[in-house]
Length: 248
Length: 319
Image 1 (tube, rainbow over the protein chains, first blue to last red):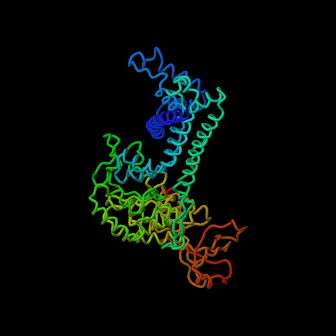
Image 2 (image 1 turned 90 degrees about the vertical axis):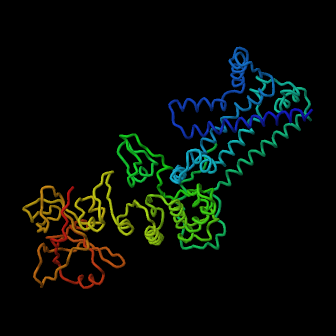
Image 3 (image 1 turned 60 degrees about the horizontal axis):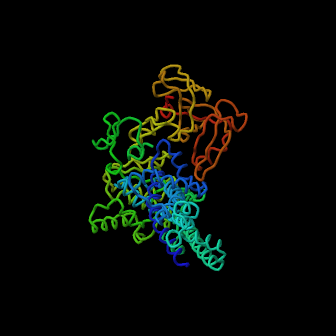
């Protein structure tokens, strides 16, 4: 009884994570790098899922996927009330966290680093892959962690587009609701515990990532510094790397 | 900003940038060579070392297209030249400011760029370290075959490091050429101030070799011909001479009162008022600099002193 929703949740989250990482990374990079008219509108639209009720998101998804929508009528793709729809719901709801974190992390990369790489012969793609992303990866990973946790806990939009069909679309959060409805508190307790543990684990990992920011790493072998007379002017180096603002 | 345009980090609104007959940018012909193809080495003010790469990887970054053993050889050479041997496996944040700067220099030089651009490389360092690194840079530049442009707000520093100077003020070239000539004949007030000239006065020409210095309240003879274009006159603090009153006085000798003195380890700066005793400590015309030894002999002379502004040392300046 407990394995089916757990496995389904993992399956849905896995697919959602994949979509989130691909979409979130590319949209985040795009928003951080390109300036275009209407950018604020796009960013705001992308952030809407953070504040809208999940039912509203679910309703929008129904419009996009349901009867009369281009996806259904023209392409004949009907994923409503399948686990794929649940994955899509998770993706849409969790995406803003990934996009925002990626955008912020990349915008925080010192532009001089990228300029330096270009003067050393890098193409834009090489700059992104070898300099920007490796320098920003903690912020990006933290955002990914938050999105995965959010997607795992997705309830409302999932219910609207995938229903709560046991064994087919009933993920853990939906199963918990069901268990409580049917007053099976023992089962609910176990599932609540699992959800809480996973969420705690992910958030702990995110915090850990932030604390071990590469620039705040202490210098190794402080005693045996070969050139002690050369003091480091920390004021001059530190302001280049402002603390990441992930939770704005 | 100028360096950034040469490197291609910033795009100028219009104009042309030509490096060794290679057109890098031309707004008329629509040419804008991408940064990666310009073959420039850039040393950033705050070094911009890649924090996730080791020192050796930082230096090797511009050499990626070479075969592995060539990369290793060049990185080794650079490490040795910059006295960084043994630090190749460190990360930038494990280095001191001076070491970081040497890595930045090594990284810029490793691909053998056509031009090396140094954007105020010493501004983030304290004085002692500045002097050390300045010596190191002068040595490095003497080995480097290409062209190097060194930007600094400190003209004395620029004088020590470079052979030729170009003085920019609000994006306009106000002086360019041999560094000694610029210090000897600054020609404009801005350049005079930038080269450390402490004394200047507005002038009113009287004839070809005579003028009235309005701010100093005196009439001066000059060696240079005064023209209508000249608006100011200046004299460097160490070129004001103190005349023994028993000796015949040279041209431009004036009685002067000491207003205020300020002491540095080896020199005294003496603030002087010409013609009449000062009202308060802000009431002075000129700053003179004398070595301590001379000051010991001077200081007990009775006021007013006689000072001379040698006509050969007076610099006529445009606005």
